[in-house]
Image (cartoon, one colour):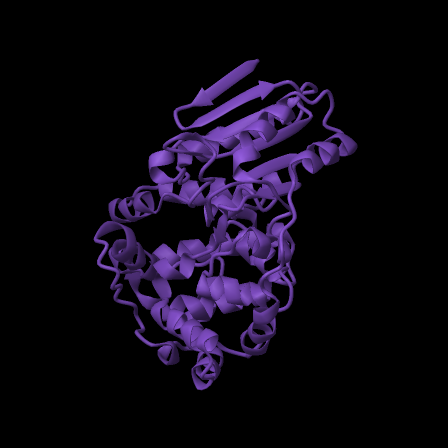
Length: 368
């Protein structure tokens, strides 16, 4: 066994498989810049290694391997970095998005064991997998509007390709999905019982070959059936989330007395009004983009989230920094959004999020 690691990433080659373990369980394996760099280094090393025929990635919890996959990026670091003017914040997003692109285009099978919490950045390092494995404990989602951000890490790309208007629904509300729902929407491929994951991991390391037939046989040994659970909701989702604007969506939901509509409207009323408008535009633009184009757009957007020059808002005054403060720092859960209401957001506030701060030849992700 050949092993190399950093503090919170364990990377090893077992048999014909490069195996990655996220080992930051106290933070639900939230990604830091060193973790992003370690993952990237391992994948770049293995893509040309003839011994490595496939790559697998898993998370850990306080009890050991599996339990949770990844809760996203380290938002506490985001908050500290923007207040301190730390340039590592810029490096984090550039390198994270480049890692997401690498995974989507990886030349070898990439198997993501998406057990437990899989949110935000966790989706970014799993949605490009050739084999997306969930369990009965899985909770998948892109809840960024809750902190005044948007579903990044390629979220515009993979959410916009969900059936119907479910991409808009997931992006705006941040609704978490269970295993069956994720499979139904194409955000996961197969379900395995959580209790079987250690055996599946060991069996993967023992394969004599990782050719497609071998991986199919391996998967069939552990997979279980799931029952679709979104059929009753998708018609409602398509009806409301196909409307032209956020105010139109919310007002139509509020006019519907059904519990689902009322709950969905209430959820949207608690999200950042500004970012709801930005996110709706993001998903609809991304539907016609390649992954590289979407990631470049998201890199532009995230810069504007922390340095919203067109609104004269910087550092702790930005929508995203305020959202993180309320959720993860002070934990008062009462962010002071600006504007306060969905109806107060104008197109002049939204459109500059999509203007790149860089000329094309100097864009941080120009090489994708």
